Length: 69
Image 1 (cartoon, rainbow, N blue to C red):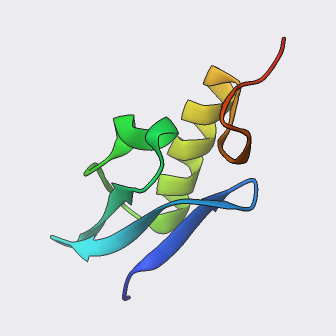
Image 2 (image 1 turned 45 degrees about the vertical axis):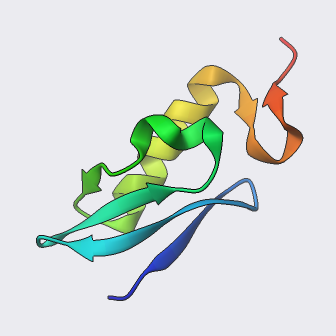
């Protein structure tokens, strides 16, 4: 596996790269910075962590902030 772009709601938020038998997430958007440099078993696991983080914050990365409640 080479690097893979990770998107959330159609917006690129980072990449995963192979690292020590896992994949390391490198954030390119502020909203997912909390996950930067974390290792996951797979790209799918990284995507699930991103969904969990962003859905819990009510953030839509392409829209610059917190969604209205």
